[in-house]
Length: 395
Image 1 (cartoon, rainbow, N blue to C red):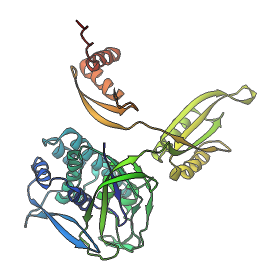
Image 2 (image 1 turned 90 degrees about the horizontal axis):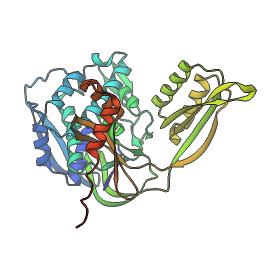
Image 3 (image 1 turned 135 degrees about the vertical axis):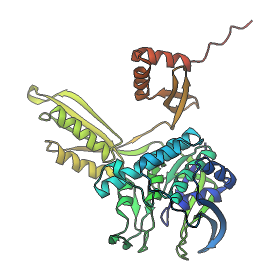
Image 4 (image 1 turned 90 degrees about the vertical axis):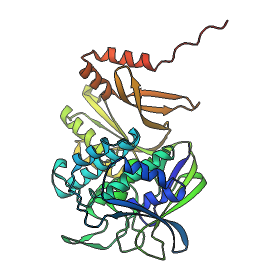
């Protein structure tokens, strides 16, 4: 499967991301049809080829109807709008995931509950179009894996209704926790919350160490006119040359004086701070004391933060640290049709090209509760439905 690599040398915004896929060759008419499925009135779409700062690209615009006054929307309103549409299930799932991440970031920086967040600009028509439009075009292109460079965010200040605030904006920075960023050399806002939410939710890996074979290139232009560097984002359709292993850092520490409640809290904190995986194993320590080993896998960029967290949040006096590599199977979220109803699952591609599909455990629990069946019976019925019938004997 081809992959998409986004080069965010001049930041990222929702309209730029959509424009880059259109410039790559995605169908504008298909985008119109998909967005019409939202049944959202009061806007029209425009696409134009333009020349900016030495490169030719595509600009994508959402034109609001004069006099249109869209209602303020919260996360529930936006999810209901998407779920009520006829968009494909993966498009709905990805778009809702982006808005949930965006809502969580807005709630945190404003100090309120997620249900209380009104999406103001993010809930406006153009932002909904950008998020859903990008997810729809990605699906139309075959749902390729997404990789991304470090994101240029800019620096300086922006003027808001609350006065001058630093760049990047608070919600943008919250969304980019765990993501490599760079100033980009410009004193202006380069990355918007919508752009940050799309990439941080859907991108599989960030960095410049990716080796790939380019197949096609698209440029999405922003609305701000700038000659150098051009206000654009570059997307490369490519074949990724997978390395022998993905670099990671392994952190571990032994504890003989931490309670179960403390251990559970540390695991939760580590995952929230970007740990790839966390395990806790019981061990017998010196002097015959029972204890635990906490071991976590960290992206190199988050290792220092997670190491400090272990030293600060546990009674330990030291943390072991070593570099390692890991190989992971490509995977994607799928929806399975079963006799008990649709089930969300993960589909992994094995080295020989075959696929392993495993239903999400939470889905098995849900079906057991809804169908009033034992969990084991639900698992057996779904496994039987996924097992192909045996080949008939030869004659």
